[in-house]
Length: 195
Image (tube, rainbow, N blue to C red; front, side, top):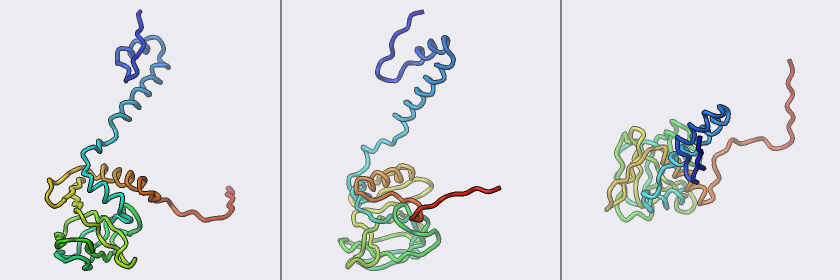
């Protein structure tokens, strides 16, 4: 039997079959390595197509809440409105609670949001460091596991909510935003088990 050394890319299945016929244990390890290689190269979303404005907004956002406006919003810059929080993707926010948000103070036009529509709100500190204000530039609408970035004068960009969460994690790492962790009590602790 003649073996050919695999190239630097993923090994062909014929090579794996030849090795498996010789040693089953080696076959298991090679199959696991091959599967991990395939998943690693194909598992990550292609973020080349992500609009630059969306990427910038996500990295600038100090807090990201997913929620539904209580009423239809059609407000000028810097005006407040209420949302019911569904979940927090960055920062704090309890499901079912209400949050008061200001429309972007930098907005040139009116902010329009539909009632009973789920949005991801990209938020920064409001004027004077009080409250939270939306970032100007676009809106993230969430429907049925898909997110849609709506930017004035551009085609809507649609992607999965999983890709949105990965974009938020990547944007937070770029901006130096710490990832959410469970708070731990400080000091020395010892754990004792008793029966």
